[in-house]
Length: 368
Image (cartoon, rainbow, N blue to C red; front, side, top):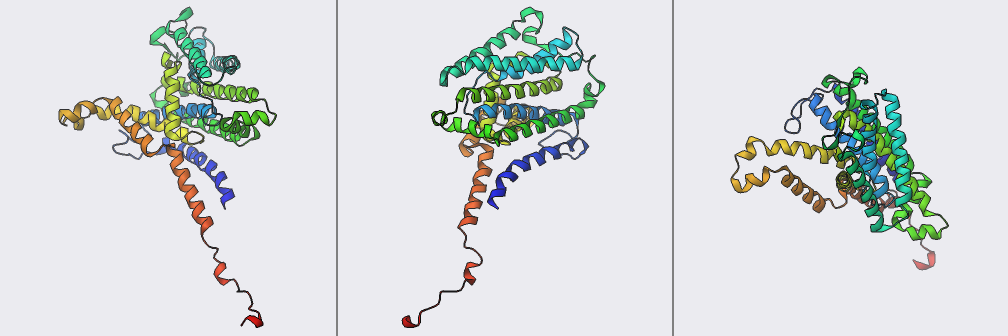
């Protein structure tokens, strides 16, 4: 029974994601949590962006959670997936498929180049080098180098070359389905990687890099593979984020967004496949909904000593994050993981049901 638990722990989040594909057909309302029905454009947009960020957090978790690499430049590859197709579509008037291929190849080349250079360093030096790359990318898009990126205001996504099913509020359900499908594919890829011999080496590097070297393995190629695969996954999720937001802004490139991904992984639980997804959805949901709640009449009617801090969404979010870290130090996935371990320990320590019916040893006649 215990041998089947790890497989089930990887399957049930996938089943949940598949069930989410049917959400556009559910018209039920959830008061307080959402303003309208579950299949309303606003709710689907909120969930679609959260799930897309979940795929980005899942890609970052391959680096931080499974390989132990703390990078502050992961947003650079996410931003490549946002900006490169937009530039190709708007500035060069390419068709969608070549534009997406250009973004994918650009993100791959960027990940290989940045990873090959950054991984020559270790520890805090590696973190600082990746931070420098991220800031350089933010400066390039923010300063509108070459007149391609639109500067601080960003660049909007042209709708003319896009297919009709991707344009307009009435097609929000299609974009939501696209986000869920991409997340399912990202989950399957991550699941296959972390359960493979390559994933075992990554986790060995996370636990003790020196020991892996003593086993005769060169650590650098394995770390570079993790860096490039995670960067390519981030580029793919950046493309979906582009269609959901109808444009690109410098925030998608800077180190601040990488820190956001790190918070999502910590909230959900590093070293878990479904944890970063749950952390990203929760983070984005609170980031959006707390703004609405802070401006509600209920908060406005509170005494000033309570009302003024609660009118600031950042204060509420900071308080929620502190509580999450205090009560769930291993993230949301760690809570369920501990419960699963406790159940297995109790099951293993319980006496076998057939023990009470086992025959007692025969008593020798000379010891009566």
